[in-house]
Image (tube, rainbow, N blue to C red; front, side):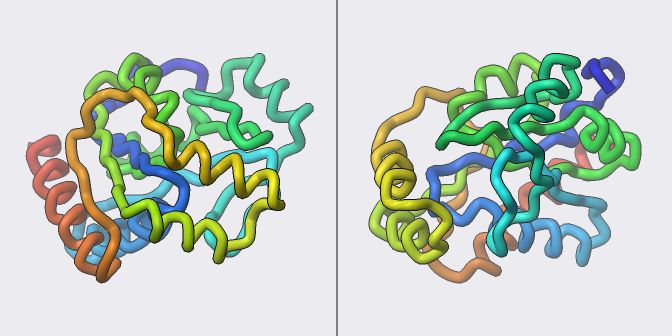
Length: 195
């Protein structure tokens, strides 16, 4: 799918936050909450030019293949950060919306203005966490070498200009409570959208 035509962008929820804020965990728990409350929901599996690890579900693709798909406009959104390419395919987005699901999508803060341009009625959710907690989580997951770790930590401390989020949740305590707070918000949003 190479166009956003006929996509109900109100069903798309873009989740952002610094590295170490726990976005993937919050998304997983929130989807579980929504499903348990009879709200159809899923998370988008991104295409990344880095092998997935236990902390996130993604599809690995070589840089060469990724750039070919990007050239053919197969990605609704793509960005390059931390020496890797990330992409959100049109097909899974279209499929989720066709099923009338809320689709939660983890993206970089740096592309949120593009997100608003492509999906004007989407929701943006910001996950926040104190810097010291985020730093501890980044180090613990062991995804980067020393250079990559320094790059992430430096970017985490920088302010990235972005549109105002629709909802902000703090992910410092009980993950279930964070997911419940976001889940209740998204449930109300879904019911309003579906009428």
